Length: 171
Image (cartoon, rainbow, N blue to C red):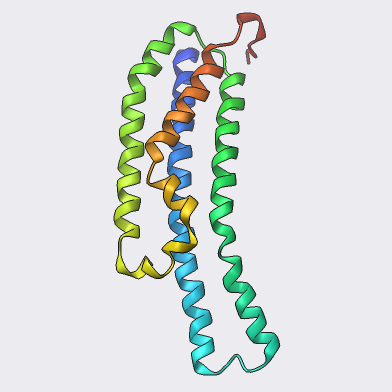
């Protein structure tokens, strides 16, 4: 039978890694979908399919809607930080394991930095140069994923190990 404390500690670490991976994936999907969407609209415009004023106006509004992706990823990042805080608070863990969290934070930061480097390599492709100005917050957040992971580690560690023993939810 597995030790419940180590399983819950592993769940807290897994939440941090999954949050970084989720944010990276969403950012890449937003970039690719913006390229495809704008190329499709420009293809319709150049072929003459968009003939009426209503169709042209809709195409302009559709292009403007891609700018919302930049704000959506920031909202997702905030929700992930709050989610880490809530799930870490619900877990019961011995404060002795904080040392392990402190040591393993370097590993989490390395993983986050690796995804940050991958994002930089993906976005530095010449295909994405036309849309880089649409995503300033996304680029700032995803090129600094290691700092985002640090924020997750700090919030998670404080809420996981900083509560009183009688306030823990034991399940």
